[in-house]
Image 1 (cartoon, rainbow, N blue to C red):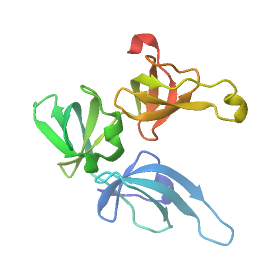
Image 2 (image 1 turned 90 degrees about the horizontal axis):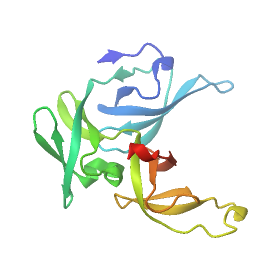
Image 3 (image 1 turned 180 degrees about the vertical axis):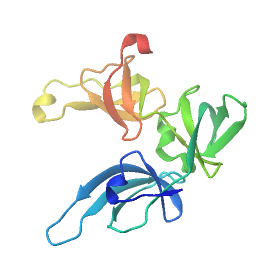
Image 4 (image 1 turned 60 degrees about the vertical axis):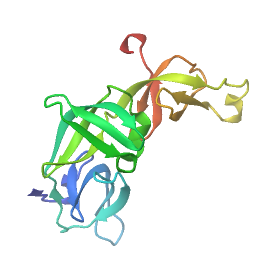
Length: 194
């Protein structure tokens, strides 16, 4: 573990140890208010539980980077509340509960690549690529005049069964790119990427 020198070293994407557990910095914003000391406002995601917390680091506060490793794995199948993954090198199978994985389960499809997160050489959770391609299995028809009302999205179901808000022009059978961290539609996927 390395101790960071200043608040400016806390950056988005960095893994730090906070309250003895590893957290990924989702957002870091330096804030200087009148007559107060500057702080680094952060949004942190717990790599054990997936829970997100907000915390403001003050000058002089000790911040350590975590000894976190990542290893490529692929999703095999779900059996009840258990989700089973396989290490492509060792063929070792690992399973995690739905509760442990959190929102990750909304975007798991058979054979999809993921990263196994290791903290002090212990497997603690699974991380998906930020952007993934999914087929739209069901999409409501956009009604005429919807955009005039300020509603420019509709609900669509992707191949994992999860629902996403998409633009009105997206139709059933199309492939779209979804941000797995926010659960938001990014763009229509190219046909050859499927």
